[in-house]
Amino acid sequence: NAGVMQNPRHLVRRRGQEARLRCSPMKGHSHVYWYRQLPEEGLKFMVYLQKENIIDESGMPKERFSAEFPKEGPSILRIQQVVRGDSAAYFCASSPRDLRDPYQETQYFGPGTRLLVL
Amino acid sequence: AQSVTQLGSHVSVSEGALVLLRCNYSSSVPPYLFWYVQYPNQGLQLLLKYTTGATLVKGINGFEAEFKKSETSFHLTKPSAHMSDAAEYFCAVSGGQAGTALIFGKGTTLSVSS
Picture (cartoon, one colour):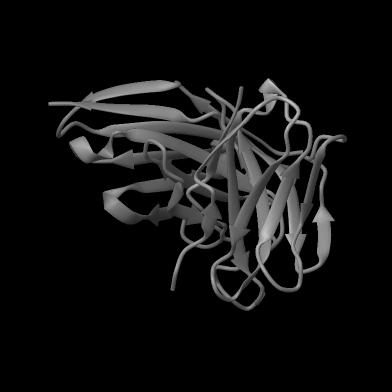
């Protein structure tokens, strides 16, 4: 069972450009979470999605950031008009959909996308 | 509201020595507690978790942690450090339901010297 996949692993953008980060959850998982890790800090929750639904976006910046998890394909975190302060590692995690699964509350993390804004 | 405090941003031990990484939490609901390890430029790997039941939890790579409700602590230990244990360790808490965001501590970097 392949783990959580994220691409690209590294992304360089100039200020004002758009960044698109992709996340494919583990097989059988329909809960996806995005976290951001700034230098010298722990991970901060951004958004929680299920297929075609945003469930909790309380950690998302109000502007320039958006996320989706379509019926088909990976989850996408989109950052428009990037600024230097967006430079960080962005991690995706997934968890199973079956509440009877003993691991349903456990989140499994991908390798992350390291975004550098020049 | 939930929060996690990891005491000590850096811990250094000698190979073969005891590893103790401290984590205290606050939670208004019965917490689920997790320890994750992150190697340089990699994602987070689950070491162990506490949900319910036995308060001493054993994880991978010889690590274990004990949930102490009275002390609101979930410290991570390993009897004998290996060089390969050098990494960053994160303690996290959640409200115990699927779909609940994890709240992370700031992390503790473990260094192991020979």
